[in-house]
Length: 206
Image 1 (spheres, one colour):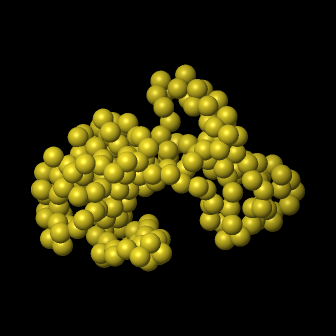
Image 2 (spheres, one colour):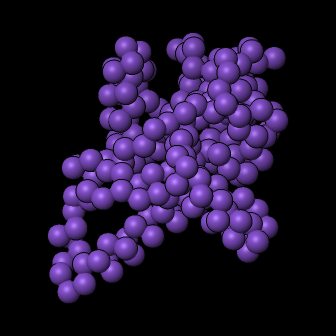
């Protein structure tokens, strides 16, 4: 299940390629409007094909509401989604439906761990909470853009692309291929009691 319009098309294309590489079968994604209110109706539509697992490629509050509705509707399979669901907004909305939910998360190397510890401490002091994955990536994007503009000087910033240098970031190492795709190792995490832990095959949902 993914977003509508361009964001949905891009997510669908990426997920389809990933499923083919993993020799898995991916049903046609169901587009979900951010204004969705009738969660029970779409839950019925999703479960009509009796899926073994469901990818919720949506923003945190909407993903949480759908996870909850799908559990109420009888789904007992595996949930998974993007790293941005590592957020208080998702766990607060999904409640117990978040237990066992799997997300892919960047692995932080030593240099990135050092950067992250400083930024997280400053963020916690300022806002009283941990930065979520989206906040970490937004911070890295801002730092990267600022560095590129500074280094460009009087030249066009476009000349800095493709980015060939690497640097540590709060969300992991900032390294890109010639097409601008970020190259970062990932690990699987799963929610248990509102926290993300290293992935372990979850027991069937009660």
